[in-house]
Image 1 (cartoon, rainbow, N blue to C red):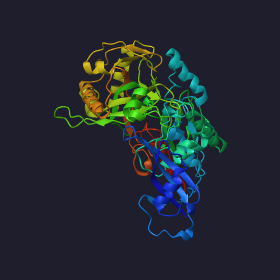
Image 2 (cartoon, one colour):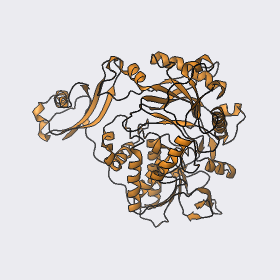
Image 3 (tube, helix red, strand yellow):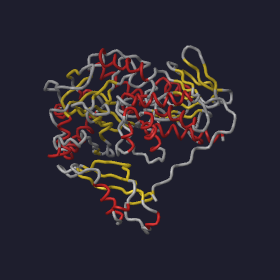
Image 4 (cartoon, helix red, strand yellow):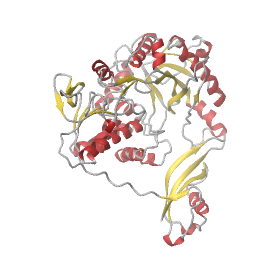
Amino acid sequence: MRLRIGNLPLWLDEPDERLRSRAAERLGVPEGKLGTIRVVRRSLDARKKGKPRHLLSVDVELPDELGLGSLPEGVQPVPDDPPPPPRAARDHRPPVIVGAGPAGLFAALGLLERGVRTVLVERGRPVGPRRRDVAKLFRAGELDPESNMNFGEGGAGAYTDGKLGTRIGHPAVRKVVETFARYGEQKGLGRILVEAKPHVGSDALPCAVEGLREELVANGVEIRWESRVVDLLVDQAGRCRGVALAGGGAIESDRVILAPGNSGRELFELFARRGWGVSAKPFAVGFRVEHPQALIDEIQYGSAAGHPKLPPADYKLAENPRLGAAPPRGVFSFCMCPGGIVVPTPTEAGLLCTNGMSNSHRSSRFANAGLVVAVSPEDFAREGFTGPLAGLEWQRRWERAAYELGGGGYRAPAMRLTDYLAGAPRAALGATSYRPGLVLADLTRLFPDVVRRGLIEALRGFERKMRGFVTSEALLIGVESRTSSPVRIERGEGLQSVAVPGLYPCGEGAGYAGGIVSSAVDGLKVAQAIGQELS
């Protein structure tokens, strides 16, 4: 029989071989009775400063005749692998998938596993050529509006870190992690199968994406690059019958999966013009904060900082300050990148937004994270923005202001974190990872008062939780504005659009996910819904 034992402790200086005796002790059996033992999860417990340890879950083989009776706490049978999905039986035209980000790619994979071939349409370029477009933005401040940090194969996640952590508990989460591990094996991504916080890295994720794409194409999926969808084909009954492309082409289909990512602004505008069931939704905005990684290590690890078995430290912070009589306002760290860099992520000329990324080894001497404040349609309305695109236009306002404050060329406005709390830039900027470069500016001029006050109040709480976090060594860089989609494209029964049957809004851009894994899972859910229709 196979059993899974959770949370076996292992101190940094102990060898993995010690796990065998700890597993036997947990089970209450002689060590010699244990068969194969395999680590399936490894997490770092750094709650006790100066004495971090690893907690591991392992699968062990035991003779069936051993007869343990009731299992000890934290021990359970290893679950069986799920059965393969049923194959589609009905005739159909290939569904069209709009967007080759995680939602689109995994929708294509999920349908292919059911015997359904698709046509995948992507406005940007494959992940290889796309790398050169990203480099031009970093080095020269030149933006290609069709191929950049957000548009192209792999979506926004391909060059912004590849973190596979998620808060959703869907059973397909494991499938997503295993898929990236399988197609990125030549980059050593087998390691993510046991990481409690799986991290692919911006240097390795493109390889995994290419491997997945090659598998899709080899099995009949058609991909059309540099093909931007500008409209839907809708029949007299209001049902979706395909997509229209820039330049006059079209692809007919009875089923269209719309997975545009959170920057698919032209499509959001199209839906608003046509009245196709789109509404403004909450998201969060703020800045990137950049610290020396060594400082974060010292705060989180204490005297153990610098131990060779410790990774660059991360953090996760949240506060809910009350600003006057209003309900508490959520303020939190977002997309924390240990050993990472801050990057420009605009998609439109004259607008600036930022994000963070790190390579698989997290080798940068900086750490960064978004520090963001929750905002809602009520906040947009106070600034004069209403209707389904209120959040989008509100985003644009502050991205335009950030670009102008940085002086153009996608240089980012920045100031020291302590100066932000003091209310004005005083000290010159220090070293940074951000390219094309920083400009000393007054970031208090960005965002409404409710965002500034919320961030200031939360920073005081962050400092109480992480002594040394609020320091003149930290830079605040503007702006972080695309934490999630500013709209939701409403869907109902069978995950179809409430306004256009045959259309399947999907992933982060449609308002149903946030991040690589949840977007991929949503793509698999839509594939399942279509597969059931065709069975």
